Length: 242
Ligand SMILES: N[C@@H](CCC(=O)N[C@@H](CS)C(=O)NCC(=O)O)C(=O)O
Image 1: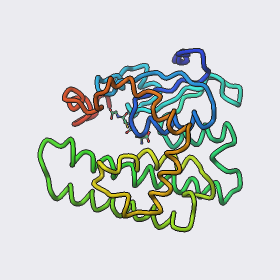
Image 2: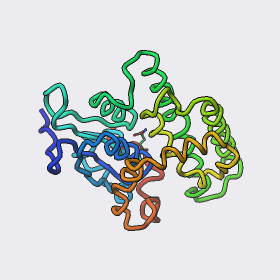
Image 3: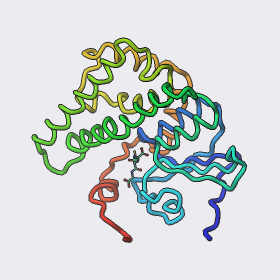
């Protein structure tokens, strides 16, 4: 049996973290919930995501991950990776930002799945081909910039007659907001998506969003995550231990 992960600070919740969109989702939600947490830095620029102790919690070698040392079921410390699973767990734990009414709850899950399956991965490809790729590949840039433009349009249409993606402000809004925040990197203009812009501004004005977004920014020491050294760690990964 492996030893349970040790607790990293005074709070009962450890958040394995680096200040990136997927990390911000969790600190924003925790600030909204008012749940104390210990930030455990995982410097993905330097390969800390391959530390065996971290891989035991997050076998996909990615942040975010959590260990809840005081889970509501009273059992052993509970570890989770994948941001959508973590958002749903924390929201359910507090009974906030994820409704209990069946249809409302699944509408949140629908938009959360859309973020995880479409918005996030497409934004990742846009960043990759526009900013990180070692060669300029116009086809890939055009393909993914078109696709993210389409996805912005899907959100804008939904928000035309809905204040939020689901019925109320929820974990689905938080999950999407961290990506739309990077709209300039997506070569999009929020002025052309007025409903998305209204939604974006409403979330940006929430104090907890501001605090959660800034939670670990000092870790980066003012540098972007994708430094020259980070490229070697983050790009071109292949199986390490099959
Ligand atoms: N689907 C995952 C994606 C997580 C993810 O891509 N994390 C990035 C930072 S935003 C990471 O840890 N990358 C490190 C690596 O790929 O080695 C989630 O939603 O949690």
